[in-house]
Image 1: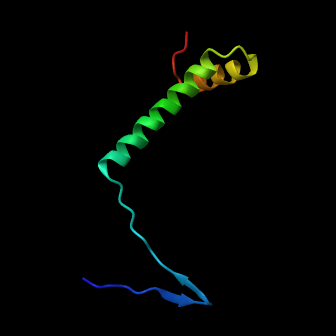
Image 2 (image 1 turned 180 degrees about the vertical axis):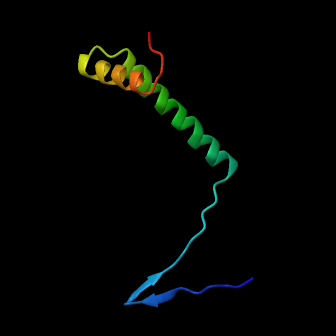
Length: 68
């Protein structure tokens, strides 16, 4: 196992950092993404703004997602 030290190039230091998320952090991120996605789908689907609804409708059709 080797330990690398930061290398200095042209006056800047390049470092690499490994980031690990805990189980609870991953769960919070997944649930947040699910709620955000559901909000966007339902907001666009039930929007009274025709431009928003039509854009979502055309996008669903182009991705072969049934919407009728």
